Amino acid sequence: MTSLMPRRRGTSVRVSVVAWSVTLVLLSAWLAVGPPKGAASPLRSVRYNPAGYYVGPVQAHSNIDPPSIILGADGIPLVQYPGIGYRENPVTAEQYGLWAYGAFLQQHDRKARDIVLHVSDWLVGTQKRARWVYDFDFVLHNLRLAQPWSSAMAQGQAMSLLERAYRLTKKAKYRAAALKALAPLGRNVASGGLRRCFFANCAHPFFEEYPTNPPSYVLNGFMYTLIGLYDLASIAPRSKAKAMYEAGRKTLEAALPKYDIDGLASYDLTHLTTHSGRPAIASAMYQAIHVYLLRALDSLKPNRRFRYYASRWEANIPGAPQ
Image 1 (cartoon, helix red, strand yellow):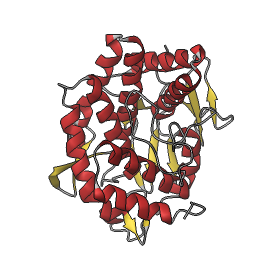
Image 2 (cartoon, helix red, strand yellow; image 1 turned 120 degrees about the vertical axis):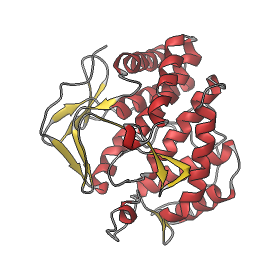
Image 3 (cartoon, one colour; image 1 turned 180 degrees about the vertical axis):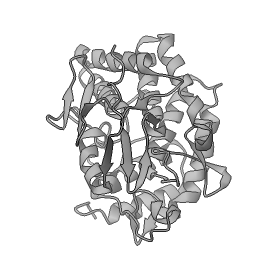
Image 4 (spheres, helix red, strand yellow; image 1 turned 135 degrees about the vertical axis):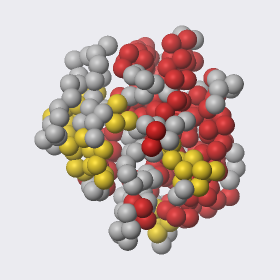
């Protein structure tokens, strides 16, 4: 397996929420299981299962979509970024593997299984100090992350893929890498980790997709991380994963009202942390992602607030069934 692409100093990627959401159509959104046949709404899902499909609707095709995303010579996706060319992105790779796992469940295709294990082997080989890193600078709104930086979402989705690879093979290396990935989620951002006290309330840990300063509190990345913790806990019940997941659920329950902007979800909370006063309303695609994730989390343990906001945001998605 190859390592991450060589670092380039002095370069950055500046992406608005709208532009990034277009990229994420290819990177992340539509990966796995959706509604049972005959369901009234495409955003309603069956009970989430760590041994089953990932969060979201079933997709016939992977996130490889040239020229935005291509498959590298080593079989790992490369994402095209303005000004710096193609780069490996841990989340993109993980979601390629999660798509393949869903394809394997549907079709029992050996090639799909091989992709799951190939990407999982890449994760094992590129994990450094318990994390996967991005080798380019990144700007969210006007908040800069300098390379090399890491993401709670990348940690969480790695856990989800590695857990499934472990179920397929029972190879200890996949479980071990997933367990190592817990460490950054247990350390504060100020100490080099990916956890924050939500608006200074340390009883409510928040796992940052983008560990910016001040905090960005990206909602979808946080929920994907919770799913990853739940997945890992299913194969490592004595680890810290379950307790971290439960603590994160409590944070989510307390946090959801802050994201609601007149019946739609904001992508993040930078309008509060930077005092800009301008919420970044999530795109229709991200509204749907929020709904899928809330319904998956509610299926694991019923929560009235999760259901309330899932229904409220779903009702206002352009084109969603009423």
